[in-house]
Each structure stands twice: as C-alpha cells, then as structure tokens.
Length: 464
Image (cartoon, rainbow, N blue to C red; front, side, top):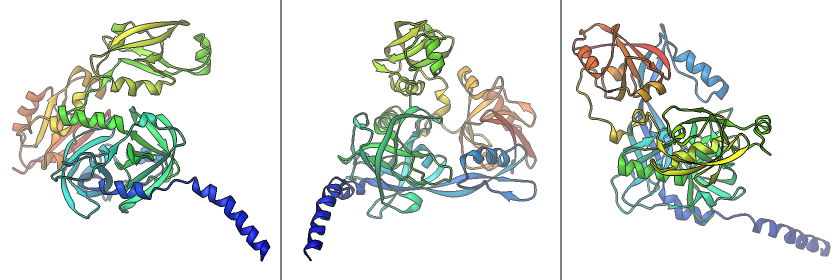
C-alpha cells in the first residue's frame, strides 16, 4: 500500500510539470471563434468534354500527375461545357461594418458568395476585389457590430512558437487545430510576393482563408496552402503574413486595385560554387541574371552579375526574399541597394517602379463597364508590357470581364486573349467590335484564344 502511494506521488511529480507547460487554447477559441466565418460559393466551372462522352478532371490527385491531367483534359479540340459547382472555405471579420478577409482562390470566379457566421446567420457577400499574386480577397457583408479579430505582428513571430487555426476543413465548421511555427519567409513557386509562414498546424481543404492566431489571440496570418502528395494534410502548411494581406486589402478598399513595387531584374540563388567565384565567404544574396532594359534597376546602375545583399535596409539571404520586399515597397520610393560587384561592395539608390502588366490583373471594382455587344464581353487593347507577359506578339484583345451568355457558355474566361474570330485577325478593340456586329446567326463561330501561353480554339453559336 505504501509502495503504491509513493509510486503515485512520484508519477504526479513527473507528469504535472510536463502538462503544465502545454498551452491552453480554450479562452482564445472562445474570444475569437465568433469572428471566423464559413464561406460557400457558387461558380461556373468548365468541364472538359471529348467527342463522345463528358470527362471530369480527377480530384485530389498527386501534384506530379496534376499537370499531365490538366493537359490531357484541357488539350486542343476539347469542348468546354460550363457547370455549376460549390466550394467551401473560411474567412474572418476585420471590421465591425462587415469587411472580411479570405483567399483569392476561395472566391475566384464565384457568381454568388455566402458568408455563414457562428450564430448560424447567412449573409450574401460582395467581392470588393482580390489579388491573385498574393491570394488575398476582400469581401463585404451588410451588417453592423460584427465580432472582429485583433491584428498581430507576424514579424515578431518566433520559429517554434505555438499558433492556432480556426476554419472549416472538409465542411466541418469552427474546427480548431494547433501547432508551431516551422519557418518564416518561405518562398513558394506560385507566391513570389509572399514571404510565407510555414507551420505544422493541420490544414485541409476548407481551411483556406481562415485565420492563424498567435498565443496572444491575434491574427498573424491567413492559412492559404499545404504541401501534399495526397491532397490532404502532411505536416506542411503555409500562411500569408497578415501585414501583407492587410496592405493588399487596404489598397483594394481605397484604390480599387493593388500596385506593387518593381525592380526590373531577373534573379537566382547564389550557390556555393558561385559564391567562391565571386570571392564571397559564403553563399547569400540574390544574383542578378538579367536587367530589364529601361527598368528601375538599369536606371540605378545595377548590372548583370551583381549580387544584391541588402535592399532598403533589409538583408537578403536568398533570392526568394527579394521580390516580397520590393513588392511591398511603395512605388516611386527611393531605396538603398547594396550589391557585391566583382568582390567589392557598392551602394546604389533605386527609384522603385510599378510592376508592369498589372492592368491584366484588375480587381472587379476597377474593371471597366461591360462592353455592350452580342457576346457579353468586356475587352481591352493590350499594352506592350502585357504582350510580353502574355506571350502575344501581335493582334489580340484582352478579355477583362465575361457576362452570362454566349461567350461564357463557350468557355471564354477573363485573362484570355482573343486572337481570331471566324479566321479574321482581331487587331484591337475597334476591330473586335466591328467583327462581332457582323457575325452570322445560327452558325458555329470558331474563335482562337490564347490562354497561359497556349492557343486554343473554342466555338459558339449566336441564336439571334
């Protein structure tokens, strides 16, 4: 009996200190759960249809097969049949009068957005605008005195610090998961302007757009991506720092669009061998591989072969760190740039420019009024920068908006470049409108578009 009592006391002495060190998230969830919302959307998405039967692209496939299937199901010669789909995501309220942050990919191409609050109310939301480059979208619902989150400082986050996510994974509302900060300033292939926060918080489809909290109950990020070979959580989650998201949201709210700083260089990492060849004691910085003619870098005297090691007072360890810093720098600001050139350090001053071709990524609030034509398309002439970015040498007009009707049913999307209609080259907007007014009724019209650098023929028929 005495032996058992002593064993119990020893066990208690060992276990209590361990459990006492674990965080308690209950109060944080109680205080912040009301400001986290579920977002559902209705959208028209194209199905790929072969000659004989309709085929849908497989879901949740491994990333290494995704590109193969995309080309297989979206190759030339396949028709596009729109169908309505529903998606689920998360978001959080940032102002009492109804502004909500979420991901661009959660609401992209949505025809209807419904926000569901914790108290079960459902409100229709308006898309104020979104930015694909940072994957941030700003919504607005008509309501007053909504519960809001408190914004934190992601730059003060420490690797190893506890963080918590609230969201709607697989449709399970108000789900809470926790973990630690695994790394900061991660650069991902599709997020050049976002220094992602990497965590091991369990994030799954439906968590996108939800908040990432620190232990003070303040939002430090927007849960945005996972790295997975199965389509589900595998221990690697990525969040957009909240300061980046709030900057984008404020620009959308006040200006209707997002302007982003531009240096005008193509860069790469410095390897050990390159560091040795440049007389560096260790690999660091961003190696300039190309200087865009007429860009800010060229005007500042930056040369091919320079290694940028500091920009505007911030040290550059890897090439992936430079684009987010430049992108967040206000256009026309002057910044000090330190480079290593042939083994010597030099300091230059660059006047940050505006990232070209941003007109091709306008948010809905800045798009022009719908062009009144038979196809329901709003189109614009291409600038030289847009032609370079979209790989269009000559002819073509940029599709900015697609209304319900003939063009949408045919599969034409915003961002497409219309090159030809019925074998007639489309040189500019005036030529486009002239061709459209003369199109015959009840006859299939072949249209050549360019999407993501690849030409595709689509067909439509005007009923009347």
